[in-house]
Amino acid sequence: MINQIKTILLMGALGALVVGAGAALSPRHMILFAVLAIAMNLGAYFFSDKIVLRMHGAQDITPGEMPALHAMVEELAARAGIPKPRVVLIPEMQPNAFATGRNPRHAVVAVTEGILQLLDHRQLRGVLAHELAHIKNRDVLLSTMAAAIASLVTWVAHALSFATFFGGSGDEDEGAGGLGGLLFILAAPVAATLIQLGISRSREYLADQTGAEISGDPEALASALVELDRTAHRVPANVSPATASLFIVNPLSGGAGALLTLFSTHPATSERVRRLMQMADRRARTSAPVLYAHQIW
View 1 (cartoon, rainbow, N blue to C red):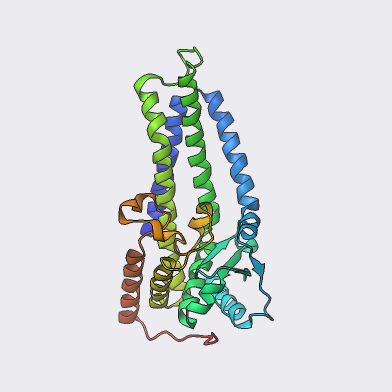
View 2 (view 1 turned 30 degrees about the vertical axis):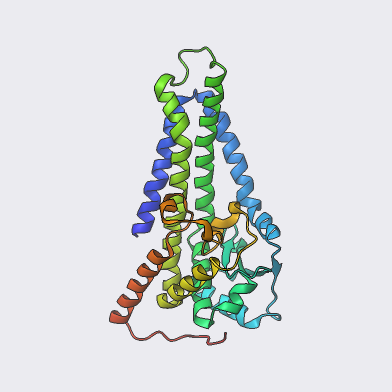
């Protein structure tokens, strides 16, 4: 619930930036940039999954090729109350995974070769539950909306910077000029990016929570995150920064530091693990031991 509220507040902050953009630019220009942002992000919403999978060389895995993996995904999808997604394999030795697709009926879960070699049954089950949680929570839709609004704000700021550089339109009644306009040009893109990244981090926390509820095993996901984060620092990944936010742990985390938290697409692994272990402790105090339906890995 806290993560849902945080997401709503952050989306509201993005909306406030759009209102600020409207004050800085004339309404007719706002409409133009809004149409451009919406068109671009609609394209991303409908086709980004295909583009991302092609970028990473993902190949479909049939149930005959990996029956245990498919059985695990099918079991967890049933527990999540969503259709079983496609399962694809990425030829990448860094252990990682992500989910994509515009809705549960068009969803895909991607796993790397490395993750299948590194994690045991419980850990992999926890990771898959996390990815199915992203699908269940419609995070692809939400991230697309956030990207559309952030793009709109950034484009307005760029338009204002060009107008300022070339002396403006000459219409004193349009837009907000002077110091206020300059501050908007400088601060708005950074603020929009920070808010968008904050939304991404809040959805990771929510996917951890929802995934742990789907699997019934928060400790397994916590253990998997520790292993994945440790390996991400040792095994390089051929991943574009543009797609790094999709993965369960940052595949480029070797270059990040604590001071860059605000600019990270992922929360600190230590904090994610702490929250999951709190969930595990609460479950241990209030429920019977977890029974696993499919000990198949």
